[in-house]
Image 1 (tube, protein in one colour):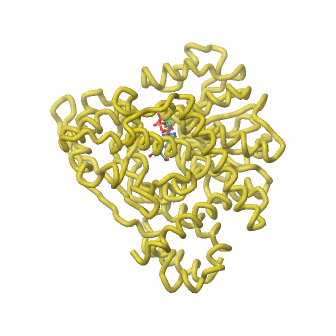
Image 2: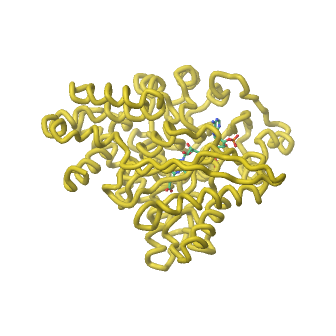
Image 3: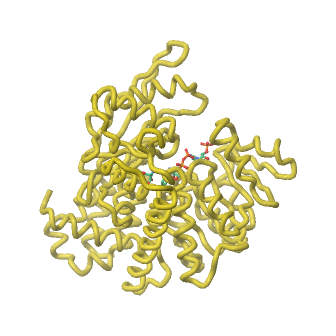
Length: 451
Ligand code: NDP
Ligand code: 2IT
């Protein structure tokens, strides 16, 4: 790494020493872009370019008080990180999960800047959320929480300013409550202020499916470029939320056999192939634990993940692993187990699901890695298509949106591949994605001066 980059990384580490996830995300990007920075080192140093790249434009943190069904008041912390708006309005999801803190918000917002640049659409990068735990809450409690959250967030967003969407713990139900409260406070029908809306009030067809489908379109391209395909392959998919479910659906359509899925409590292993209809019923309708699956499919096995160093899903023999739950779910031990079991490709549906050591282990063992910033960009890309449709006051059919999504994912893969090739990085699409995104952001930032 160049001396300048090393110095910036050291300073960033000192300044943000209590933010491990953010430092991990920054460290990975700065390592990858070193050969690009080298070419313009003097200019970048003089204009503190990388220092500006790793400093969010704005962080908003606020109190979210809400009342439970028994009349007890609770207080959570809300966040919105508006990281970089040089390519378009800040864009990125909202996460409701007890683990949410400033480090996680900043890592997600930082990654979103690069991901959104890769889509080729006019969107900057942001992220938000709260340490609120939606598990076990009634519909009324979820609604009151969303309303209180929006009471504050509405001051900072708008269809040309910042456009939130869903992420962990935030799906169509939450977006509905958030949109309702925004509309009530602002007294305007500003459809493009949130994406992931219901179809009845400005949502886009195929947005629900987009992240999972997009991941599989990216995998298809990556495998094709390496003389392989999805047909007949055995796949394990962690998580059983929005991304995991639609990745499973598209993988099955392409003739792959998904043998395991999970949630934060455990894993279901169905050697005959996961019955997705049952998973959808348990997760999308009943909002129950994945363990319920074995009640309906007695031949399937349930493996508890409590107290384990990594999810037991990574011990199951497979050709392809798709981490679609959360950050750092594949550590070095998990990576070693996957490689020992014969995995040849990993596709990151979740954001930063693989630790730095695990990524390096995969790359050193010639495992194809589809990096999150590129591979899961289909969700936010389709969100941008939802914004376009809202601006036109019109909508496209499912097939039209899906076709655009497919093209976007093909283009993203091609950009990652071309950048990797240009810098002699072979099939290291992780570095390819970082380089391709950085070049685009750098052009926009340089053109706009020192701001
Ligand atoms: P959902 O809330 O729909 O599902 C999350 C899934 O991951 C659940 O099965 C959940 O299990 C599991 N999970 C969450 N946190 C943990 C944890 N700490 N340990 C183990 N399992 C966990 O979220 P999404 O499917 O939307 O998001 C999944 C990932 O994909 C996230 O990393 C998100 O940032 C990323 N992503 C999402 C996009 C989208 O459009 N929704 C777009 C791009 C990336 P449980 O129910 O037990 O908590
Ligand atoms: O991580 C992500 O890209 C998302 N959660 C989707 C963001 C969006 O604005 O659709």
